[in-house]
Image (tube, rainbow, N blue to C red; front, top):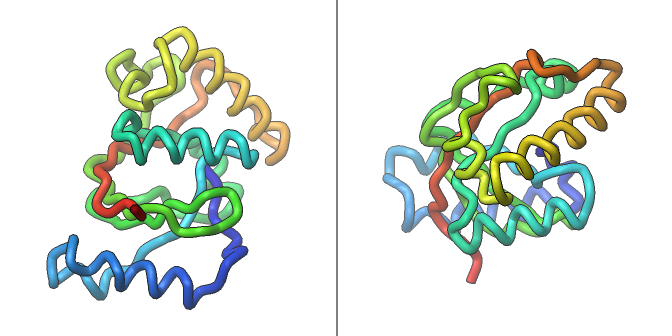
Amino acid sequence: MAENPLRGSDEKLEAFWKSCWDYIPAEDRNASFSSWFFGDSAELADDLLALVLEGKKTATCGALFDYEHDNEDPPEQGSYHILTDFAGMPRCLIQMTSVSLAAFCDVSEEFALAEGEGTFAEWRRAHQEFFTRRAEATGNSFNKDTLLVLERFKLIYPVK
């Protein structure tokens, strides 16, 4: 997943956040939120977003080295996130239900299947390719012991 460089505007994101208020507890309306898209290409971002909107994707993961490279903390349980398409258009609001760390080799089949991207073998192959690309782009290396941030979420509000 990649932080959204706000190809749209801050105002667009704020307006979307406010449009979600009927779907979140009143005490959370002043919470901070982040905005991001999945993957590292338009095709991947939009394909994975579609899985969320269809209810097939309820988990995602990122390499801890990506967070460290970007000087960002991993998300926290309970945090809100606006998912955008690759062009930066807000498409839905999610809330993290759990966040944990695991080595790539220790990711369970159950978690991988919650990502909604195919079989466990397909998940492992696609994620190995993705994290290898990310490692090269950030000056890191990827191996079976690379720590991943495992994130489970629930869809709060999709754009209709």
